Amino acid sequence: MRYVRWSVVWSLILLLGLPPALADETQQHRREAGHPATSPERLHILAGNSDWVVRQRVGRNRRAPPELLHQLAGDPHPQVRVGVATNLGTADRTFLKLARDPDPAVRSVVARFEYVSAEALAILASDDNGEIRLEVARNWNTDVLTLQRLSGDPLPEVSQMAQLSLAKRREEADE
Image (spheres, rainbow, N blue to C red):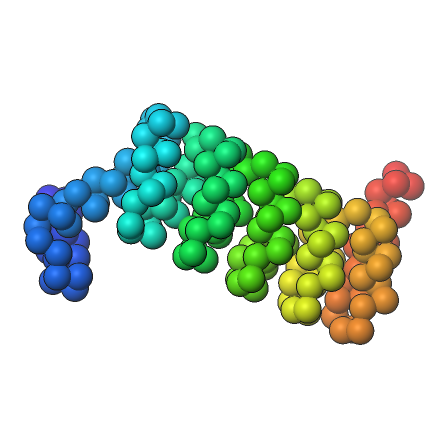
């Protein structure tokens, strides 16, 4: 086990050209940022780290305060924003921000997330990207009005999925 750990550290050193002490510090920050016992105060400090992986792990950390997650939803690196989009502690106002993200990969993750609000999904239902609209049509949190709108989508896959989702809702309502 020790050999594997050091091989990873030395690989980072060789690839990134980092001095050993800095590589160790980066690894420590990454572990700390993702650890559930890290305090919210420390997560605030780690959120300012220059390493995007550290910030991503802060964004995925369930102990990160909602205001910190909202701040990270504007991070320049899309993988940090994806981390925020998959955090169970992310507030609805942050999902609304992420639903308007410039990166389609981030919006796609939001559209697929099972805990996203119907309001954020309604925003994504108007996305230019058909794959994102398809994910909205598949998401169980999409409200009936949004599904009805998507049932008239110009892409057949989207309209068919929205119609199928509406039919499933009717079936469950009849049970």
